[in-house]
Image (cartoon, rainbow, N blue to C red; front, side, top):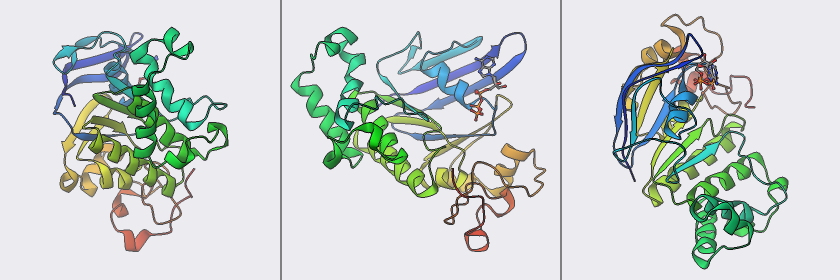
Length: 278
Ligand SMILES: Nc1ncnc2c1ncn2[C@@H]1O[C@H](COP(=O)(O)OP(=O)(O)OP(=O)(O)O)[C@@H](O)[C@H]1O
């Protein structure tokens, strides 16, 4: 577990693309935080300054009281495109999470010790894939692959897990499953977690806290009860919803992640509407 602190963070790409605009926020240990916001709002950039993939143009970012400088081993990443080695088993992929702890060469030389192997099996157990440990990643479903991606991040023994749209390409049921496992991983391993999500209703099920980002600015910071229709409307539509389907991708099973903000929480009225999850 670790704390995260943004202190007046601004990130400008090139001459004038302001991806983060004077963002200040403190995230205590163990919190499960969901970043919400329209495409281009700055969510990925928020995560990228945390994992050292890019640096702030101004302000400071700290993890556990230390400034972020380059990629840090205690930060585990879960990607939308999971980046698994398709020809390796789920177990083999999970084991690659030890690379950042052991070093690439030792791992290439087959230098995984018992602790790594145990960690890989434990992590697969956490994501419900212990029985499928020997299955080739390439033959797994999208949801299973994403769960292997979570297991791989756990084997890294991180204190902070960052997930960038981890369920964006999954159908609503698989998306919920994967989010459930991400939450379970956070609970079992005492992890601080920050994930971006497009599906508001799935976010509401799993988040402890929600940060709304728009045009690089932090426009909302609150709990589930505070995340009202008006707030969603404001984050995604400037309070001027036109009734078109958004945000995210609505499911066809009653998932309302893609419902209009006006009906986003009225499940009975809008169940089975929407365009079918990706
Ligand atoms: N490497 C880059 N170079 C230049 N501009 C960038 C770069 N990365 C992001 N941007 C711009 O910064 C802004 C914020 O992008 P970012 O990817 O952080 O948003 P996002 O909320 O994650 O969007 P999405 O949900 O579409 O992934 C956008 O205007 C984007 O075009």
